[in-house]
Length: 95
Length: 106
Image (tube, rainbow over all chains, first blue to last red; front, side, top):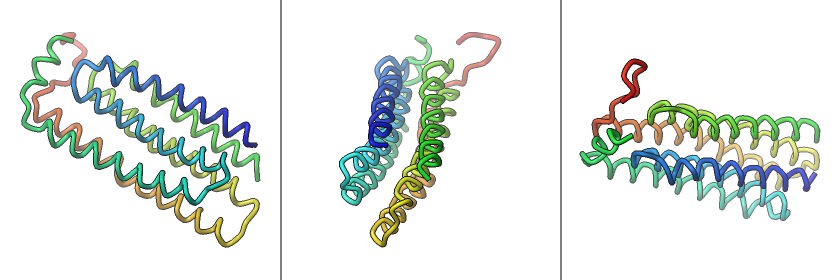
């Protein structure tokens, strides 16, 4: 059973590479935000899986909970920061 | 009980792969948001359900508490993911990002 957890964790890391691609090559800044948000939500699950792998479930559940909060606040702060920026419009034309 | 756990974990993985592929393939920023926001939330829900079933078969008081905490995480992600996606779209619209239309490519 724990090998199955290991395989799911590795597969999740591979999926993170996919959303990392979007975070790097995203044409507009907000695409990068979407990529980071996707990676953040996958890390929450990865933390839970690691918790189950190492047997210390309670500790890792708290870490995953804290990470979910952080991910949410980060996305809110970043999108709030990009509210007034007019720069996005030209970038999206270069697509 | 283990079969259920494996089943839910695999469905969670399928949702995550759908989300990852959706993020890459979608043509425009707004359509790219659609799978990212939804499928990740659903993937988290399915995988946590699988982990709960896995931790159910040696049931005791402290596993009950960890199950409740996992449900709290799922509940929080259900709340936070749509609001986060909403604020991203709000930032995009305010910055004048036009959505992709079929006729003209730009």
